[in-house]
Image 1 (tube, rainbow, N blue to C red):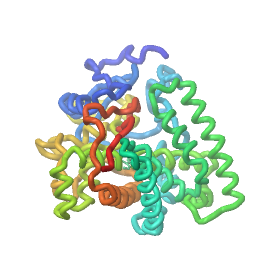
Image 2: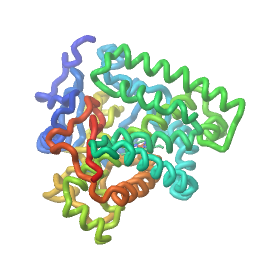
Image 3: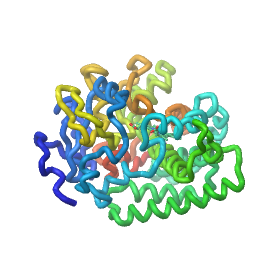
Image 4: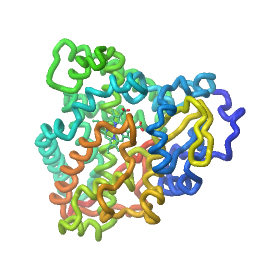
Length: 413
Ligand code: HEM
């Protein structure tokens, strides 16, 4: 890769740590640095947006697009597929990567399938999965040893739910989950990460072709037979959407359930308010989404002309990162105590954990439903649950864009 900084007239960039050693410290530094901050992403310069109001305006601005070909460093061949984060952006054609009318065409079927009314149909399935996984936790902790609630409970649940929606065979779920885990980790060699993607592509394509031959009443069949805007989705577009749905549909909700459990166990006074019915579980879910969101940084968007925002001009063709964790800790939006976990904040909490504008998360209602079922059931089944290690020992996985814990061990009694 050529030096991406040659010719760049930016101030000293804030380096985003690929090992995610101090997420809170990094978030604080980003917020303190200003609304739009030059950052370094594994040697590549970009701009990080850290304020709610600026992000809201930018996410509605049609001049800020997802089209990779608008990125100057990509067009000029300075950034290539050798850059380890490229897979976050160059992820194939899907609702996640296109803009405008094409984006609506690619997204409509998914959005229709994930409305609060439609997902009510799988509530009982989520309840049943939750019960089974709580049994598995009980079994794992029967001898009094610590149980990793993330691995045993939070991790399998969202994968089972998204696979149920798409009718992805149950037996393939552990293999998929393991592949994604290795793919997202910065410790996995880049070549291996690209191989994982290729293996997934082949596997997903087989699944699409099989479903084409035997359609069912599932979201994948709906995508295959979508005729939005009078034009069916191409096989590549179905593939892109399928990949976006599985990846976005499981990782993030794992983080939500794990983070909410951790936050409550570390704030027993607030847990008590919830147990006493003085604060609804909805408040726990919303405050967790704000304070400890799944997506720390969302890569990447590109201005099609110079954009004057937050006292800075972002030049046409530069990379722009939505730093959702920093945005959610913006004191101008959430008050001087934005850094504090507080389930008594007034609802609705206007956070940006699900993004904003045309690309706002279509799975928001589903993940809220999963968390609203999983969390009360977990705390009811194990009323004496407590952390098994001091919180300072809890580590993040080296997943630069995500708030993903290595493990969260708890004692059940
Ligand atoms: C988009 C967060 C759960 C599917 C997004 C975006 C965010 C987000 C921030 C916007 C990205 C951007 O700035 O462009 C979350 C969080 C979740 C969650 C925090 C759970 C706690 C889900 C679930 C699904 C899903 C359960 C599917 C079943 C998607 C898809 C997109 C997306 C397909 C791309 C939408 C588009 O670009 O039009 N999500 N998500 N997400 N999410 Fe989620």
